[in-house]
Image (cartoon, rainbow, N blue to C red; front, side, top):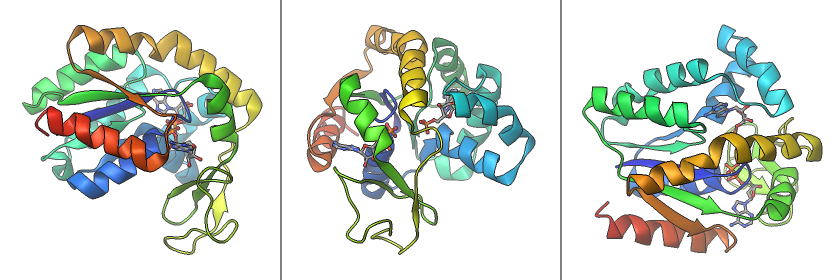
Length: 217
Ligand code: ADP
Ligand code: AMP
């Protein structure tokens, strides 16, 4: 299964991708996570991505497409993958088409998690991530049992530097201008499925699984 989970920043893509990884046994490919790791390691890629990420802009297409091409060619993607946060522009979607064709694969489905922007800001500002295992929490909507401690591995939670009201406003503007047009793009090729992201996390997962089952995945 070659799946894209789309949606505005904070819509719940990463949260849902982690659930689908557990169910389908294929990797989650998050360009945001890849860039954050690169920034942490101080690599050339990290240096190229850092300032864009801090201000809520997109990392240039050629950089982003390059890391996705390399990642999708790895052995663990042979049986499929879940793209989370890629593509974010029509140019990235076009490049993905070529990458998939080169790999002899095609997209199974594009799930778009729909959440109104008023809710997205609260979701992003309250997001907390485990430093050790990367699990995602929310201080109000998905709180850990012990404050600031990961339920899964006991790691310490942190807040992303770009999860501020100011950067979120920018990220939402960028989403409207560059990423929302992908909805029409994928509708046009019959792969698009709309998911109501305003429901409880478990219900969103159920809806995704039922859409995927209907598509034979
Ligand atoms: P994205 O990957 O789309 O940026 P995340 O999966 O990281 O979004 O979710 C953003 C924040 O919203 C996290 O704090 C997460 O715990 C919370 N969240 C995710 N799904 C829901 C939901 N259905 N209802 C309420 N909060 C949610
Ligand atoms: P995310 O973790 O998906 O919220 O992404 C965090 C940041 O990483 C974004 O605000 C961008 O700066 C960068 N980023 C992640 N994915 C992409 C992408 N597909 N194209 C360009 N920039 C990206």
